[in-house]
Image (cartoon, rainbow, N blue to C red; front, side, top):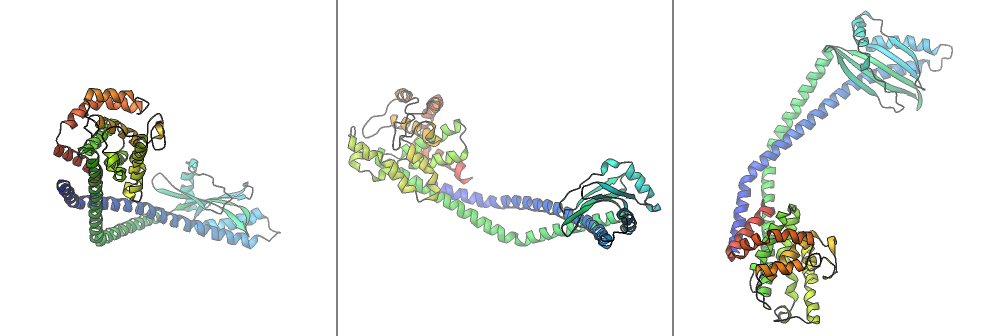
Length: 437
């Protein structure tokens, strides 16, 4: 026991020594991740603000023109719009604009007649595929920024026009953006990103000591709690094994058998941890069985056997209030169920029996057959395997049994010939790999 405690303490010390490296890696990853997310958010926000400010300016001017002439029935709508849109185009810097009615039918399209936009219009016409249509009924504005020939910057804006929640039509416009404005936008984005990044770094450096010591303390408590739980199941399991078989080596062997068998079939780590806990505590309910029954020489009568059967239920009762042992109930409650449904306590059968319990049932019986008990001498390896095979698809899951038989001779030789201290050391190493690393 002291050896296990010392090993666990050494593991905790090693974990504490490695925590700085682990924490720095996580902190750097978090810093990079936050910086990337922040950069993407900043770029999108600044671009959105930049583009929508232009779109809003267009929208405000257009809405004013609509409000001005909406009730003037004597003026042709197309003529009024054409005059007003020319003014807007000159004021806002639009080079192309199209007006659609509420049915999405185009009734007006204008191109700027200003000399300063002549080359821009020519460039734009050379790549008409860049212009797309977003005639949506929602009030959402849509925009698309694109560049032609590396030095001509354009933005296409599309949005619906409403008056008193009534759709009047749609506007599509293309605006030329001066290179100086684009450069200023990029400079603003760069400055903001650098500022945010430096702020994140400074803030991280300020709170690092607090988080580091809290993380270190939490990790220490976590390892101590796990080690305490392991010590508990080890002590309790061995105590029950001593009552039942005069040796706690049974628990070491059956747990080792279970882990190595589970590894051979590539059982996942989480399930192996369940198997380990269940293996240690599989007979914990026997603490409630009297010695006259538990240690009886010879066969139990029906009444005594019924009492003996109750140990699985008693075992579940003992661990039910421990959240860490909750999953161990899989093995404790089901390790005496049989594949054909003739086991106890619920006569569960086939794949309905948890996999961990089906695995443990095989290794538990194998160790019982090859071990000395108050009521019998140990069977040879060959005799034990012969008896196991008789339970193919009746007592045991046939597929699992075949897998165990293939590795059983190696397991038997590696485990049965080892002394108690060797078994403990090997088991402690395996427990460490599954619970403390």
